[in-house]
Structure formats: structure tokens, C-alpha cells
Image 1 (cartoon, rainbow, N blue to C red):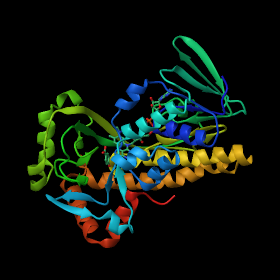
Image 2 (cartoon, helix red, strand yellow):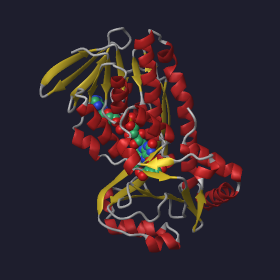
Image 3 (cartoon, rainbow, N blue to C red):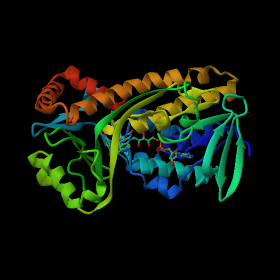
Image 4 (cartoon, rainbow, N blue to C red):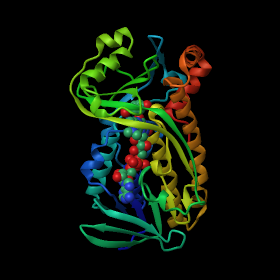
Length: 390
Ligand code: RFL
Ligand code: PHB
């Protein structure tokens, strides 16, 4: 087999890259380890920035997002038992985000790929990447017991944090920066109306909580939990009781509960690998960086990597120029580190850290008070939340 770009991973990064390259007439094959059903069953991101919406439009897959996505112009910060609204729309001169789940984004991209008749190889085993330091990189994998090899011009490593692309880079060629947080998020998805029409980020003495949603009839809630907790320990009743304790009296009264349709625990991590290009292999999305979900930046960062990578490849094939390819890593990393900083800061502000005790709680409350009463501070939060300009 031969193609121009071999894309490893059919998550949002790989699928979006495939679609943008297809629009530009560049040939690509996507190789994915899991089945399409498994990829769609992972419940992850919920909030899309304007930059991501624009890119989905450019890829020709924005129709359902505009129809079904919920436009949000603000969110609430809850601390000391009271809610304070951050009016993102007003503070940023009219910017907004859209609540539209990663599952739906992935669905739309899969449908577009299918109707264009483009190749995605699902359930590929033992995927490996070779010779990316030469002009003839190769990808090998096994499918239904048969070995295959793809020859290509470039490899795009869109295979997430646990993928093989970053792991195939020789030691010494990559530097990793990492911070692991001493807690996780226990998340529940349920077919009940959201407690509020906007998101609520809560700082409480019992730990962080987040009230989010997927639609007007489907809610997504999270509570901070110890890393040692197992999801089986948390009955639905125990989850709702804990969430209720972390809400203000009005939200507590309005909370509608019901059976969970998904429940999982996610660890929180900040991670960046530098650089993001190794000869003719590029890393994009979670393969190169992870943010804790507090700032809702992971999928949005993946989308900007893909924007930079697709335009670099389009420039390479169209204008025979390597300028975009040569600056890919630097352009991405500049944006990534700003989102890393914001996500780390917002996580540090909103969660209980075992080591910081009641002094830490008081400092957080003072900062939240400042944040919700100083226009300059609210503006900085709003500007980062809606997404910094490209
Ligand atoms: P993905 O989604 O992990 O996809 C990688 C794909 O590669 C496949 N793969 C392989 N394929 C072939 N061979 C191999 N050896 C392979 N190894 C792996 C995998 O099966 C998979 O299909 O990475 P991608 O595409 O870069 O997308 C990144 C996003 O998924 C991620 O950043 C976001 O979900 C993060 N995130 C959020 N981001 C936001 O922008 N806004 C949010 O509100 C938000 N909320 C969240 C989140 C992530 C969360 N979790 C569970 C970590 C909330 C949570 C709870
Ligand atoms: C979500 O809806 O899953 C979600 C929303 C906002 C976040 C993180 C996750 O900051």
C-alpha cells in the first residue's frame, strides 16, 4: 500500500486531519487500533472554542454542531456557597463557546469520511512506525492475522497519550515535561435535564465539582475524588449525594437525578513533549500534550495542532515549500504552553490539594473573590476560557 500521509489514530485529531487533507486533494490512510464503536463510547470533551468551530466548518462537518450545539456566553464560579457569573460574552467583546460533545464531533467526522469513501483501517494490531528519519517512512500493522506495510511521505502521530508514535522516537530526541495531580475526576453521564443552563465550576471544602451537559436533556457531572477510588465503589446514589453537598442551596434544590448511562474516573495530568516533529513524523493532539480537563482545552488544542499541520502539508504539496513543516513544532508549542499554564492555574484554583490544608482553601477563596470582583481578573479568565487567538 502507498499513500501520501499515514495517520495513526482515528480520534478527533486523526479524523479532522484526514478530512482537511482530503479537502485539499491529499491522500491519507487512517490506521486505528480500536473499533469505531469503541472510539465512540469514550465520553470526553464537551466545550468547543470558536477556533475549533471554525475548523470543523472548514472541514465541512459543522452543520449538526450549529444545529444541535448549545451556545454559551458565560459560566458560574461557585465558592463559599455562592455562585458568581463570568460573563464571557461581554468580557471578551462578543466571544462564546459551544457545548457539543466529542462523541458527536467524532460521529460527524466518521460520517463525512465514510460518505467520501475514504480508507480507515480499524482494529489494526501491532501498529509500528519506521524510517521517519528518511524520505520513505513506513507503517506496519496486522489486520485479521495478515501483515501489511504502508509506504508514505509523512506520518501523523494522532494516537493519543498512550500511542506508539511518541514512544518510537529515540531516547534523547524528545524532552517530556510532566505534572501529575494527586486526585481524579469521577464523571457521570445521565439523561436528566442540566441543573443550570450554563456550566457551574465549584470550589468547596469537600473538593471540586463541575456541572456540565451534552444537551437540554443530557447532563454531565464531575466530582473530584481520591486517585485510589475505584468506579465500582461509587453507586449512583453516592455520586448524587456527594454532588449535592458541593452545590449551592438553589442548585441543590433544582438538581434532577437519574440512573447513570456512563461513569468513569479520569486521572489529571499536565504533559508536554518537545519537539513535535521528528524528521517526517509529526505528533498532534494528546500524543504530544495533555492538560487537566478543568480549562476544557484538550480537544481545542488538538484542533489547532491539526490546523497548523494540515496547512503545513498543503503548503508542502502545493507550493513545494517546507516552511510550514519546519515551523510546525514551534508554532504549536507556543500556543500549547499558554493553554497548559491556564489549565494548571484553573485546576490549582478550584481543587482541594491534600497538602495545602485550610490555609490553601482560604487563599483560593480570596483569589476567587478577587477574580469575580475585578474586571481585569475576570477578563483574563474569560479571554483564556474562550480561547486565545491563533
Ligand atoms: P484521542 O482521542 O486519545 O485519540 C487517539 C486515538 O488513537 C488510537 N490509538 C492507536 N491507533 C493505532 N495504533 C496505536 N498503537 C494506537 N494507540 C492509540 C486510540 O484508540 C484513539 O482512537 O486523542 P486526540 O485525537 O488527540 O484527541 C484529544 C482529545 O480526545 C482530548 O484532548 C480531550 O478529550 C480532552 N478533554 C477535553 N477537551 C476539551 O477541549 N474540552 C473539554 O471539555 C474536555 N473535557 C477531556 C474532557 C478529557 C477527559 N478525559 C477523559 C481525559 C473531559 C475528560 C473527562
Ligand atoms: C464536559 O462537559 O465534559 C466538560 C466541560 C467543561 C470542562 C471539562 C469537561 O472544563
